Image 1 (cartoon, rainbow, N blue to C red):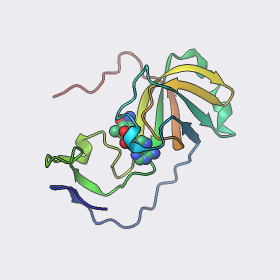
Image 2: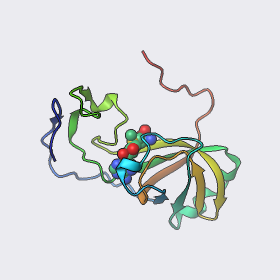
Image 3: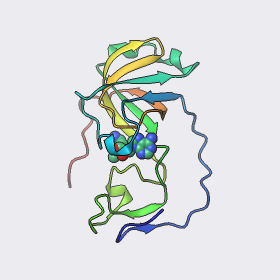
Image 4: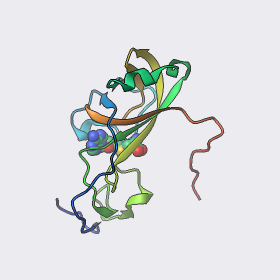
Length: 152
Ligand code: SAM
């Protein structure tokens, strides 16, 4: 793929992915990256997190939480950029100083509002991924005392 001015890519062998297991899929209204929000909005559209068997049963007890944290695999991302220019404006930053989906291991995370559960499906608000994005993990939201990373 083409590089933008100032971007730098690594020469990488074909990825030999760690043996992650996809445990389901995320259903959202977005099928095109240009329509997808850059970060989820807690009042955004209702999305469905669909767990595959046997992991649907692993949701037991989740209903008690107002919020959950989702980890997902941003499967359509390129994975070789060291420096990126997200706005394509000549300004360049290191991959690890961005929450860009373009990263060596394209894991996305969102803390979402848990609206309900229907068997093996969670209804949530606050997502920012494309329809069909593979699901990696579901965790109860972090405790209130876990700080959001502040600026230096
Ligand atoms: N909230 C997550 C985080 O902070 O880790 C992801 C943030 S990332 C900036 C969200 C963007 O990733 C979306 O705006 C969209 O452009 C892109 N994206 C969404 N789903 C994707 C997918 N399945 N594969 C590749 N890119 C995706």
